[in-house]
Length: 102
Ligand code: HEC
Image 1 (cartoon, helix red, strand yellow):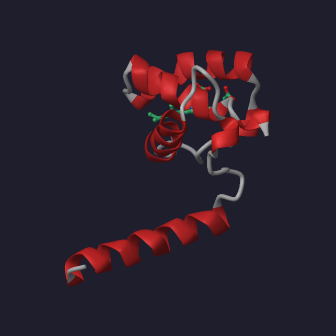
Image 2 (cartoon, helix red, strand yellow):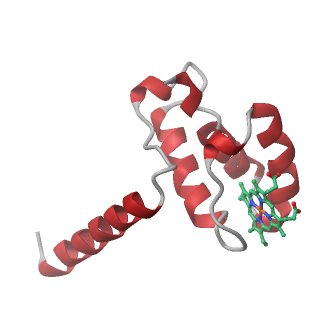
């Protein structure tokens, strides 16, 4: 591994660990959260989008805040604010509502 890459990995890992301590309300999706219509890749993308796009104006909301009906309503209001596509909104929705399968 070249030095630039390993620095990036260390920086990424440090960020990841920092995130873990301050945002323990976010779970890391696992195979157990998947279903025929939701893949692990969907859930990981949904988590990335949530962390990246939904914490700009307020704290990143915790998945447990709403059930599926509640998130449908909230995302309808937040999608234009976050300026995200329908596909991105759908991935965020899948992440927000998948934890209950554990
Ligand atoms: C441009 C700023 C902005 C962005 C980006 C944004 N929000 Fe919000 N959000 C707000 C404001 C302002 C409120 C409070 C007023 C309201 O409810 O419209 C709010 C309220 C909320 C609430 C509390 C109300 C409720 O329905 O529970 C949740 C949860 C929420 N946002 C989730 C999200 C999610 C998920 C995203 C990413 C898709 C997001 N927000 C992106 C501005 C933003």
